[in-house]
Image (tube, rainbow, N blue to C red):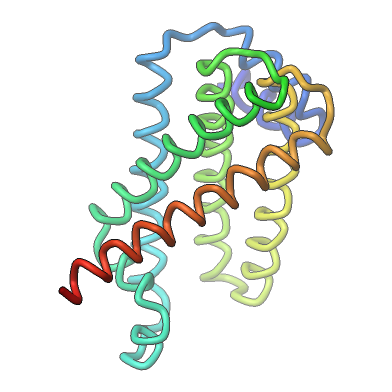
Length: 196
Protein backbone atom coordinates (compact mmCIF):
# COMPACT_ATOMS: atom_id res chain seq x y z
CA UNK A 1 0.00 0.00 0.00
CA UNK A 2 2.88 2.35 0.78
CA UNK A 3 4.20 1.91 -2.77
CA UNK A 4 0.92 3.14 -4.27
CA UNK A 5 0.68 6.06 -1.83
CA UNK A 6 4.26 7.09 -2.63
CA UNK A 7 3.51 6.76 -6.34
CA UNK A 8 0.41 8.96 -5.95
CA UNK A 9 2.46 11.64 -4.16
CA UNK A 10 5.19 11.37 -6.80
CA UNK A 11 2.53 11.74 -9.51
CA UNK A 12 1.52 15.09 -8.07
CA UNK A 13 4.98 16.39 -7.23
CA UNK A 14 7.01 14.96 -10.14
CA UNK A 15 4.55 13.60 -12.71
CA UNK A 16 7.13 12.71 -15.34
CA UNK A 17 9.14 10.60 -12.88
CA UNK A 18 5.95 8.86 -11.78
CA UNK A 19 5.03 8.23 -15.41
CA UNK A 20 8.42 6.64 -16.07
CA UNK A 21 7.95 4.41 -13.01
CA UNK A 22 4.49 3.31 -14.14
CA UNK A 23 5.74 2.56 -17.64
CA UNK A 24 8.63 0.64 -16.08
CA UNK A 25 6.16 -1.82 -14.53
CA UNK A 26 5.61 -3.23 -18.04
CA UNK A 27 2.17 -4.66 -17.29
CA UNK A 28 0.55 -6.82 -19.98
CA UNK A 29 -1.81 -4.90 -22.25
CA UNK A 30 -4.76 -7.17 -21.39
CA UNK A 31 -4.38 -6.27 -17.70
CA UNK A 32 -4.12 -2.59 -18.58
CA UNK A 33 -7.42 -2.70 -20.47
CA UNK A 34 -9.03 -4.44 -17.49
CA UNK A 35 -7.68 -1.70 -15.21
CA UNK A 36 -9.02 1.00 -17.55
CA UNK A 37 -12.47 -0.61 -17.55
CA UNK A 38 -12.38 -1.13 -13.77
CA UNK A 39 -11.58 2.48 -12.96
CA UNK A 40 -14.26 3.57 -15.43
CA UNK A 41 -16.77 1.42 -13.52
CA UNK A 42 -15.71 2.99 -10.21
CA UNK A 43 -15.94 6.48 -11.70
CA UNK A 44 -19.46 5.77 -13.00
CA UNK A 45 -20.58 4.41 -9.62
CA UNK A 46 -19.17 7.39 -7.74
CA UNK A 47 -20.69 9.88 -10.18
CA UNK A 48 -24.09 8.18 -9.87
CA UNK A 49 -23.80 8.09 -6.08
CA UNK A 50 -22.95 11.79 -6.05
CA UNK A 51 -26.01 12.53 -8.20
CA UNK A 52 -28.28 10.49 -5.92
CA UNK A 53 -26.97 12.13 -2.77
CA UNK A 54 -27.01 15.66 -4.19
CA UNK A 55 -30.03 17.87 -4.77
CA UNK A 56 -32.54 16.50 -7.29
CA UNK A 57 -32.33 17.71 -10.88
CA UNK A 58 -35.40 19.59 -12.06
CA UNK A 59 -37.12 18.68 -15.35
CA UNK A 60 -36.06 22.08 -16.73
CA UNK A 61 -32.41 21.36 -15.97
CA UNK A 62 -32.78 17.90 -17.49
CA UNK A 63 -34.27 19.44 -20.67
CA UNK A 64 -31.40 21.94 -20.92
CA UNK A 65 -28.69 19.34 -20.24
CA UNK A 66 -29.87 15.83 -21.27
CA UNK A 67 -26.46 14.43 -20.29
CA UNK A 68 -27.56 14.74 -16.63
CA UNK A 69 -29.85 11.76 -17.22
CA UNK A 70 -26.73 9.58 -17.53
CA UNK A 71 -26.00 10.08 -13.84
CA UNK A 72 -29.24 8.24 -13.07
CA UNK A 73 -28.14 5.31 -15.25
CA UNK A 74 -24.80 4.02 -13.99
CA UNK A 75 -24.50 1.32 -16.67
CA UNK A 76 -24.98 3.81 -19.53
CA UNK A 77 -22.54 6.20 -17.85
CA UNK A 78 -20.01 3.37 -17.47
CA UNK A 79 -20.28 2.42 -21.16
CA UNK A 80 -19.84 6.05 -22.17
CA UNK A 81 -16.85 6.57 -19.83
CA UNK A 82 -15.05 3.31 -20.67
CA UNK A 83 -15.68 3.61 -24.39
CA UNK A 84 -14.74 7.27 -24.46
CA UNK A 85 -11.55 6.63 -22.51
CA UNK A 86 -10.48 3.78 -24.79
CA UNK A 87 -11.18 5.84 -27.91
CA UNK A 88 -9.36 8.83 -26.41
CA UNK A 89 -6.25 6.82 -25.52
CA UNK A 90 -6.07 5.31 -29.00
CA UNK A 91 -6.67 8.69 -30.64
CA UNK A 92 -3.90 10.29 -28.56
CA UNK A 93 -1.53 7.47 -29.46
CA UNK A 94 -2.21 7.65 -33.20
CA UNK A 95 -2.23 11.45 -33.31
CA UNK A 96 1.00 11.57 -31.31
CA UNK A 97 2.60 9.01 -33.62
CA UNK A 98 1.55 11.05 -36.66
CA UNK A 99 3.08 14.16 -35.06
CA UNK A 100 6.47 12.53 -34.50
CA UNK A 101 5.93 10.90 -31.12
CA UNK A 102 7.13 7.45 -30.21
CA UNK A 103 6.31 5.18 -27.35
CA UNK A 104 3.93 2.29 -27.01
CA UNK A 105 0.15 2.19 -26.80
CA UNK A 106 0.48 0.10 -23.63
CA UNK A 107 2.42 2.93 -21.96
CA UNK A 108 -0.42 5.35 -22.66
CA UNK A 109 -3.03 2.87 -21.41
CA UNK A 110 -1.05 2.32 -18.20
CA UNK A 111 -0.72 6.05 -17.54
CA UNK A 112 -4.37 6.83 -18.27
CA UNK A 113 -5.44 3.92 -16.03
CA UNK A 114 -3.31 5.35 -13.24
CA UNK A 115 -4.66 8.86 -13.87
CA UNK A 116 -8.23 7.57 -13.66
CA UNK A 117 -7.41 5.67 -10.46
CA UNK A 118 -6.10 8.91 -8.93
CA UNK A 119 -9.28 10.67 -10.05
CA UNK A 120 -11.40 7.98 -8.37
CA UNK A 121 -9.58 8.56 -5.08
CA UNK A 122 -9.96 12.32 -5.45
CA UNK A 123 -13.64 11.90 -6.35
CA UNK A 124 -14.19 9.88 -3.17
CA UNK A 125 -12.50 12.63 -1.17
CA UNK A 126 -14.66 15.31 -2.79
CA UNK A 127 -17.78 13.23 -2.12
CA UNK A 128 -16.91 12.89 1.58
CA UNK A 129 -15.96 16.57 1.77
CA UNK A 130 -19.27 17.58 0.19
CA UNK A 131 -21.07 16.31 3.29
CA UNK A 132 -18.89 18.30 5.66
CA UNK A 133 -18.20 21.52 3.75
CA UNK A 134 -20.03 21.68 0.37
CA UNK A 135 -18.51 25.03 -0.66
CA UNK A 136 -14.96 23.81 -0.19
CA UNK A 137 -15.80 20.53 -1.94
CA UNK A 138 -16.65 22.44 -5.12
CA UNK A 139 -13.32 24.31 -4.95
CA UNK A 140 -11.41 21.07 -4.35
CA UNK A 141 -13.20 19.49 -7.33
CA UNK A 142 -12.05 22.40 -9.51
CA UNK A 143 -8.46 22.06 -8.26
CA UNK A 144 -8.57 18.30 -8.94
CA UNK A 145 -9.69 18.99 -12.52
CA UNK A 146 -6.83 21.43 -13.06
CA UNK A 147 -4.32 18.99 -11.56
CA UNK A 148 -5.72 16.16 -13.72
CA UNK A 149 -5.21 18.29 -16.84
CA UNK A 150 -1.61 19.02 -15.80
CA UNK A 151 -0.95 15.33 -15.14
CA UNK A 152 -2.53 14.40 -18.48
CA UNK A 153 -0.13 16.69 -20.35
CA UNK A 154 2.88 15.31 -18.47
CA UNK A 155 1.77 11.70 -18.99
CA UNK A 156 1.21 12.25 -22.73
CA UNK A 157 4.66 13.86 -22.99
CA UNK A 158 6.36 10.88 -21.32
CA UNK A 159 4.31 8.12 -22.98
CA UNK A 160 4.83 9.50 -26.49
CA UNK A 161 8.46 10.42 -25.73
CA UNK A 162 8.02 13.96 -27.02
CA UNK A 163 9.45 15.75 -23.94
CA UNK A 164 7.35 18.84 -24.54
CA UNK A 165 4.25 19.88 -22.62
CA UNK A 166 3.38 22.30 -25.42
CA UNK A 167 3.44 19.51 -28.00
CA UNK A 168 1.43 17.30 -25.62
CA UNK A 169 -1.11 20.11 -25.38
CA UNK A 170 -1.24 20.36 -29.17
CA UNK A 171 -1.80 16.61 -29.49
CA UNK A 172 -4.54 16.68 -26.86
CA UNK A 173 -6.30 19.63 -28.53
CA UNK A 174 -6.07 17.96 -31.96
CA UNK A 175 -7.63 14.80 -30.53
CA UNK A 176 -10.40 16.70 -28.74
CA UNK A 177 -11.17 18.69 -31.90
CA UNK A 178 -11.20 15.52 -34.00
CA UNK A 179 -13.46 13.70 -31.55
CA UNK A 180 -15.85 16.67 -31.42
CA UNK A 181 -16.05 16.82 -35.23
CA UNK A 182 -16.65 13.06 -35.33
CA UNK A 183 -19.33 13.34 -32.65
CA UNK A 184 -21.07 16.19 -34.50
CA UNK A 185 -20.97 14.12 -37.70
CA UNK A 186 -22.48 11.14 -35.87
CA UNK A 187 -25.20 13.30 -34.31
CA UNK A 188 -25.98 14.76 -37.73
CA UNK A 189 -26.27 11.29 -39.24
CA UNK A 190 -28.51 10.13 -36.42
CA UNK A 191 -30.59 13.29 -36.67
CA UNK A 192 -31.01 12.83 -40.42
CA UNK A 193 -31.91 9.16 -39.94
CA UNK A 194 -34.39 10.09 -37.20
CA UNK A 195 -35.98 12.77 -39.38
CA UNK A 196 -36.43 10.49 -42.38
